[in-house]
Length: 157
Image (cartoon, rainbow, N blue to C red):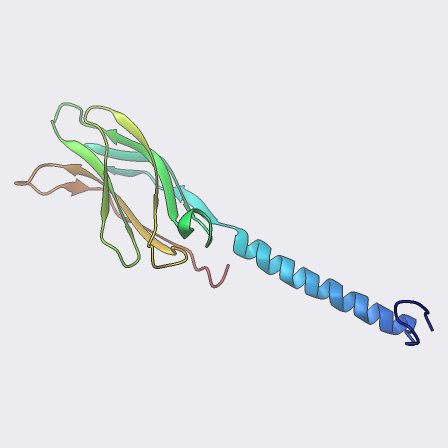
């Protein structure tokens, strides 16, 4: 018998070990779940290249819910590879359930872009598409590099 806090309850050594092990196991399970959920999904974006356009040094991050609106965050160097053609370059980004959003670069130079895209009605973003293009005006179609499809399954961590 242990007097004091437990009063007249009889606690054996085996019973105390079970309680301590149960609490330790519960703590490990909960902390592992929080750690896995708190980790954003990160990665690199392959070089996007086509006539007159290059998007390099790219990276992305799917932010977890509650951080930066659960946004798809991305960055890279957008380059006008044909400086004398008179056409501008841009990056298009599309997240699940929304239209393309366009970010223009500068003619005859390189521009570092760092942007975040999210859906206001969702806690987090799990799917995004990204492409780099040369704006050839209204009479001729734009030429674009191959589209990158990026995703993260938040249900699996």
